[in-house]
Image 1: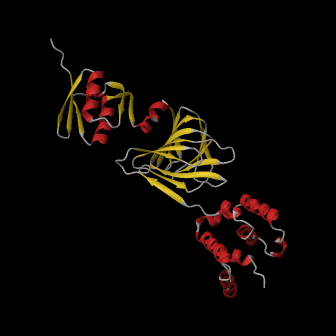
Image 2: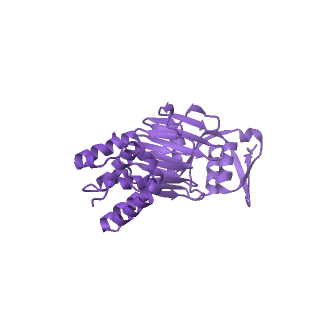
Image 3: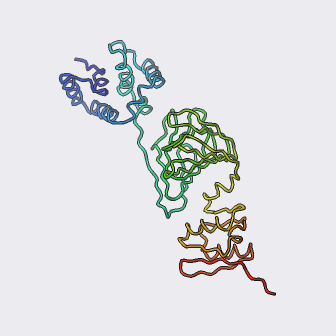
Length: 326
């Protein structure tokens, strides 16, 4: 008796009777090939990806593949939603498994950096490059699907995305999605205040809410800060070279106050920086500092740029105005 593959569809959506389940188990044990197909169906049933196979576009693709490869579809007398699942399952038992390669559940690799790690450069299979910053994590599929290239980000990263006309690139976060069109941009996800800061260097990107509805389209040179709690965003014009300098292990201070610099040095070197006066704290600087420089070298560089001096006492740094000789 010929096996009815529609039973696998019913198994996938958990609608088998006990008798039908026994028939499936008997078929499963008949050959190694049957065992392989059943194992993939079982994985599909457990996977969250199963839900998206009911998408009409994917179903149409599946049915077209079936019609091109199998001329016996009339023997499957299943209707409605069951036919949709059966269409996918037929791909599993066709002459090759190329259909399954398109629809199979994705498996992911997560690259995570500890807080003290600085920057990791990651080459993706499509030719794109990602610079991941410390205390961040990037989840990447083992292989991109034919439909899209989607990665998930926690923390901060810079993306340089290879353009692909047939495949979207999407960066997914807990608060916003970013649809990319051959672009360079940075993303900083702040889980504490549930916001996402995006800076576009080149190309075009769309910010979308978690349902895929467009929030806005960004232009190069823009920084958009999106607040998830109240669904608002702020757009600013910025120097993109300054905003993206961290991927080269550099800190670029562009016309910012000594107090702002002191705050960053305090966090980076785990010290307390004390500035002699409010006037001195408000003095502005422009300089580039390599991330691997020693604190004393950074302070010497600041002394070269302005008439200041400093004193180090354990984890306390004291900065003074340099007294001119009379």
